[in-house]
Length: 359
Image (cartoon, rainbow, N blue to C red; front, side, top):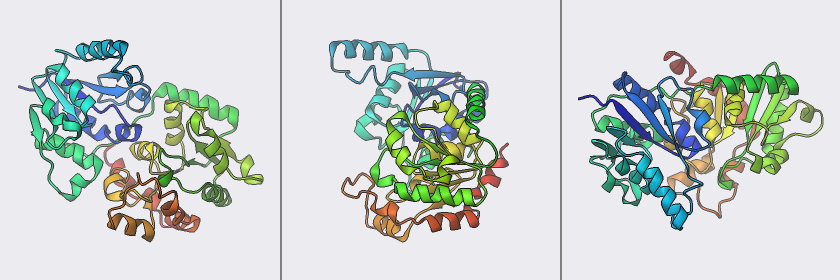
């Protein structure tokens, strides 16, 4: 019997949510009449709320439940988990952590699918446990999630498209008119959650100057409010500064998606902006240092990256981006010239034709 109500659990992080769109598209393809909900961290709704395959968002109040061991936290956690009960007959836990496993178990769904090797022993909460083989496809984060569906007998489609919310697009257009954003625009996402993934600020400044010299009329620097100082440090000076616009903290997630969707080129560290740009099918270059492109490259855009010999040697030795002593050593090995060469080689457009065939 086909499921009528499905819950996809992938609450965070933002980049992982963005690249989970292929799971949602696969579920809709397999079950065209089902009600499909997505359990998603509050604040991330804009990244998927306009997706045509989605029926409902179930907000996960992570901040409110952060102090779960306190009396109030326990009450709020119990109330949230209770609210999931008896609402779904199929659950897909694409996160594979203790909290996502608890959410899955709390639904009491007839079928609860998760990874057999899920972390934090969360596999105990599922009654369909899928072992993912060591295939090249399953090395990639998206491939692993799709393999979870396939292992449970659910056919998949390689459709990772995202959709900017129309109302956010209108807000962005108003903002762009006020700020004089027009013509050929490049968007630079110069920040990330880890210092080891950050390209040096001076490199971003030099890149912005080079892009303006190559005919781009505006360069946008995006970031969160907490990243204002870092974004400010990455912006060019002099005449190039007049053609550059600092968006840090000035746009919400939906507006940032609309800005990415309207840009002629997106260049990003390995961050959420990179995965959003891939989902929006934009010309894109992802800059990779201590993270493995075989696992983290933008979905269906494995050629749209720039890395270095130093980074490849680091990964071959089993290095990890969480090494706090690493600093930006590997990102410094990426030169501005290598990024411009990738543009000349049209790597930023690699994979776009395959994506457009889905439209």
